[in-house]
Image (tube, rainbow, N blue to C red; front, side, top):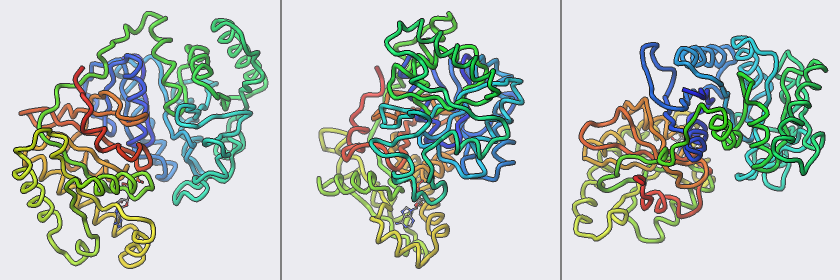
Length: 440
Ligand code: ADP
């Protein structure tokens, strides 16, 4: 194994894994820290944790456990992956986890690079932009768990750290240099920062080239901390070192079989638009009513009976993607707020997640082997219910969302899962996912 990634949430883990396979690294995603005896054959292993908003000591403990497993598996470089919007609270967990990993790896210097220009996240003079807006003017300002009200990442990270945080300025490195000279210039900048006592440098990056230069300059650092963008540049560095033979088929899964289903438990704007598009195009859709769940009605059983009937009815249709069903709890903000006021935010969310967990089990029992799941928490509930702990990463449906294959799924035929973070994907995402060829 070359790269070991510790990801602070589930859909973020699939996001970075997707970047790595795109550049030819055979990548396996493990859900939670595996037992010490578990072995994996891959160029990169991504361990998906759920540590973004848990208490600091828990985040540190789990991240260190993941590190120990990756070290035992022979990893050559470690990357702590967080969100490209630097989702964190004043207490952490990006800072404390970074420092704990630095201690454990015995390293005195690392970078922090959330930039992901392809998704509109750029960092300039230490300030994070989301599209044209500063982070602090973007929707992240109102995030329920990790509101980001300061775009100055040096200040944000310093508040979470005991070590000194500094800035690797893009305009401190001359532009227009050859790649080799640019890498050397960044490394000279690292040396200056180290001499100033900086232990963690927020790295400016506004283009993919910046990320590639940075990845090359960091080749000898034991620890990197970043969003998924930096992963773009890493495989090339490993190939140049002779560690990696890029595999053009890294993103290929076993052929998909049968009809698919979409489970939408996200209420994001993007998922609302996707569900709306599905319905208006006349595709079969079933709606989960959280109030019916609260009354104890057998909603999951009803959804499964409905899904089975749809499959029987659609069996004579020409194309399998057209037979797919959608089961959703997705609701616009006003409706969601009304339900949350009535039933409570956490209880209603838990009821809906439990319902999706049961539905996913039922669909797999009916023989379905292709599930598209919308929503980070929803995806977590589904994967857990299906007992899946290892995912092979396949081709991307859109940036950040790959098809995956459960390595410990049913034995008869492969189980493919597309796990979408709420806000990802265009209005036709579900259809695009179902029509994508996963075997190349
Ligand atoms: P996202 O990735 O968009 O944040 P998540 O799945 O992480 O999506 O979170 C959505 C949460 O909202 C889940 O806990 C889900 O069960 C809950 N939820 C979805 N639909 C409804 C609804 N109609 N009423 C109440 N809660 C809902």
